[in-house]
Image (cartoon, helix red, strand yellow):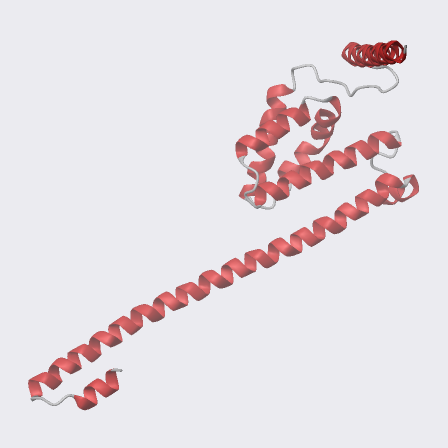
Length: 219
């Protein structure tokens, strides 16, 4: 609307000088807005670049996960990965691969800020309390710490390693043996069996009482 207002304006030279000053103010405001627009474009491009990189990394990790799953399910394909660990039982190799997939999933969640430091410590403490998780981290910790791609990823590995150092002198909990259940498992089994027998006996008593009542009413 400024051109229309200027065209309709009639006045002395001092008024036109005032309009000139207003025009210069428009120029300053336009420069400020242009700078803000450039900053906005730069921020947008940076966020898009980060998002594209995150999408590429996710696609690469998904492809790596599929390869690991194939190796976990086929001993012959597992041999293709090289001689490392092939002397170990295949079940142990599968457990180490699965443990590696767990750590990688946590790392992705931590990198996207969906996993906090405190939550990571809780997960790591539980993971490292067992023999499988602790033995895996003892083998993989140095490689993961040395190959961290950024400060954020290194901090992720440092948190897990801090929990490992805190728990390494405590006895690790072995995985349960399905063929040799622990005392707690046996107690739970007997408790469930006792409850089942009690419910069965109660049902038989109720059924007997109902039959007795029907028999009496029929007489």
